[in-house]
Image (cartoon, rainbow, N blue to C red; front, top):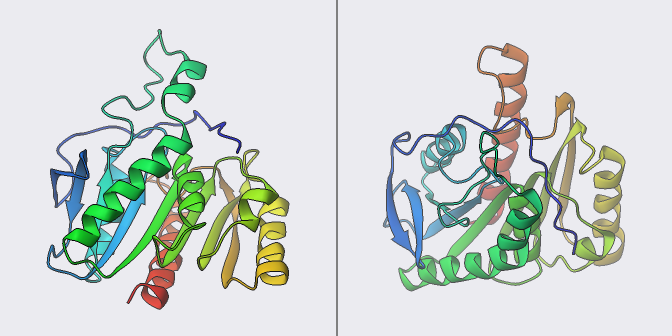
Length: 239
């Protein structure tokens, strides 16, 4: 599996934003929000810039407002990408934080949710997280998957998918070109019969759903539309 990811436009990080709180879940520090007694949970898997991203936590709170218990784990163990760090070794970071390890950690988090009485789990991933969530969709660990501007994936990755999956892509994206994402949808429909939804958002670039400019009305509208599509997919399958 390809694990190359995009190191562009990091969000402003904060450890205090969001309506929820940070607790340990499955051995990972995790931002949690929403009703903890809900039987329906959503796992959000961040891009390389980590679980503290304010817009990601804002999105988690939005999903939680629909009645889901939402968890955003720190899959990087306190070591997200920091482009302001002059000593950043991108290749070493990729090796230390591969998507294979992210997927295994995610399974532990899902098991922890199940042990708390959760009966259905949906997962959404962004860039790096999109690759992780696609791998989760190879299993029966989750009931629905959403990938938003995913990192680089292959046809073989898609052929393994067994879970209903929505793929939300950007018109401007070298990591996941629109033509490739549309082809993924064709494969899912023709070869596996897995329910899928592929949508390409015009005029936006990789990362738009969690790294939009709040002063750009069009950018905000596109991000919110993607969030709504994601939530609708979860409402359909996580129940």
